[in-house]
Image (cartoon, rainbow, N blue to C red; front, side, top):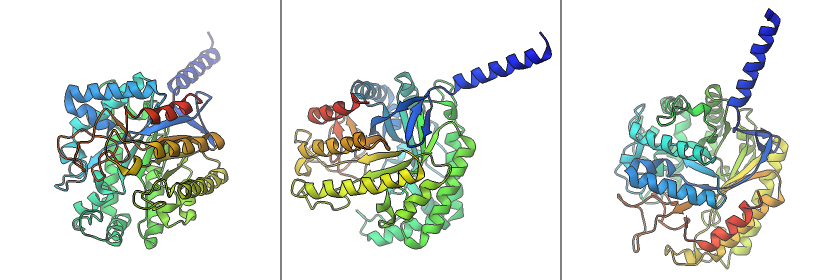
Amino acid sequence: MNTKKILFTFLLLTASITCFAQRGFVRVEGTRFTIDGKPYRYIGANYWYGGLLATNGEKGKNRLKTELDFLKKNGITNLRIMVGAEGLTTYPYRTPSEKSLQPEPGKFDENIAYGLDYLLDELGKRNMKAVLHFTNTWDWSGGLGQYLEWNGYGTQPRSKYGGYTWNENQHYTSQFFTCQKCMDELDVYIKYILHRTNSINGKKYVSDPAIMAWEIINEPRAMEQSATPAFEAWMQHVSSLIKSIDNNHLLTTGSEGDIASDNDISVFKTIHADKNIDYLTIHIWPKNWSWFKDTSIVAGYANTITNATNYINRHIQIAKELNKPLVIEEFGLPRDSQSFDINSTTRNRDNFYDFIFGQMMQHPEISGANFWAFGGIARPKPGQIFWKDGNEFMGDPGGEEQGLNSVFDTDASTWRIIRKYTEMQ
């Protein structure tokens, strides 16, 4: 065989190996996702605590496998999950210290990292995908405020339960974007994850098709208008960092939409126009955004649908302008009358889910929708509102009323709605 033939054979073999190695990864073509050249649209769930379950021994592993099997059976194959919590705290309304992936700056708990390894391995066995967000604007998992605490900015104001005002909380968090040491420490955390090799199956994270996408942060906000330029610069810095290490996976922001910037959609457009950001995200929270008052879900339902329709439409317009897919990656509604009783009805939630999934069917730019959140086989404790040490994790994180937005495996009417749409995909 002459030299040219040897070279040609080598190049052909290399191309074949490369092509094979890339199979199973989600790609973007205009305003749609593809896998191996075929369209990919999904109905998914938020499962923020998924990486923590295997850290609870065999009981936790068995729960994880049971819940993943249940989700797969019901057509849910895309899960949005927290990479890990940050910091140690005595604050009761957040992810407990013993489950912190990064208890101190630059120090990581391998026992907690193992839980994420285990989750990704189980997802891979089921041909399921994970969207993984690195950090959080909010304090229930440590988040940006934890880096400020580590760097001498004082204790983070906790607006919901700590007696501080919302403005005080916003001002505190906005300082992150000018705290160089804070940003550097978060970079170290991101690099730790991106350079990780799964301890169970030996796959490098950057080469694992069980991961669909990375998210910079859950619900990014500048928090104060004056911090917007620094916030946008930080988002661009992190997107560039992630893509410089991992170009196999998609990357997105984790944004709620223009609600995060007091309805200034230009900020939303700027952070998603970044060449390293592959798709757009929005969240929809009728209760949190005061689209209805108190427990008046029924009385305010028409207003909820009107506002949600308008919210979706104006963000679809940005997706069209940027020629990128849009995912409604968080949306939720309490049980009827905002009950925490697992036996209470979910008529309004079911109707709202039907509406959101219907919007996805109506608009091809919407390539995915993840409801908040899967509560699995966990159950709220009667008479207990907030999470306590020793309780099972569920869809509502530590800072929220347990059972408020969780969809449990026994919520039959909700699952009928979900299956109706998963069977259309």
